Amino acid sequence: MSQSTDESEAVSRRTFVRAGAGAAVAAAGFPLVTGTAAADYGGWLDGVDGYEGTVDYTGQDEVTVTVGAGDGLSFDPVAILVDPGTTVVWQWSGQGGQHNVVDQDGAFESELMGEEGHTFEHAFESEGTFKYFCNPHKAVGMKGVVAVGSTDDELVDPEGGSDSGSGGDGTESGNASEGGNSSEGGGDGGDQAGSGGVDLSRDDLIGAALGLATAIPLLSVGLGIVDLDPE
Image 1 (cartoon, rainbow, N blue to C red):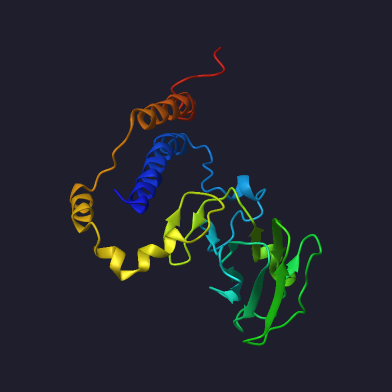
Image 2: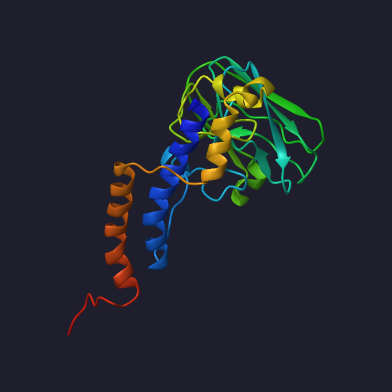
């Protein structure tokens, strides 16, 4: 079994365990927090459009982020992981009015511009987490993150895949796009497609059961089955 297959099954198992507890808590009417942004970036990216994890650009000397993506009020990618010494180039799309790029701790700040093709760049020499925003549109969630060196957030492959590790070297993810590797072990791929299931371990099932055990009392209270204020 290939490493990419192992990683996919690991992600599927985590999804199963989270879903077991999450569905019951949501049914009880309690808020359900998804993703890892609140934990990893202190809630900085809560509600930010387009955020689905940190895109892994380690191994690259220069990375480009679009300013004014989507509806014109987003950065794309929202969060990125780079190596120390990498230069990040922000490039304006010309959409959404005038924007700037401002680090919340003052490490960098661009001028306010709306012209398509305008660029601003900054070289990140030291490790750390740099949270930034567009000053005119910060209130509507135009924010981003540059993680340098490492991050605890779930990593996303630049080509659209997912890597559940943190702070990886960014080299193995590229194998998925190489034609030669796609044909290797084709039989295994066929077996996987045919089964369509997830091989859950004993620990996975125990984790899901514990999640449900925690959620059931909440569900009972939410549905009025258990009265916490008896007469």
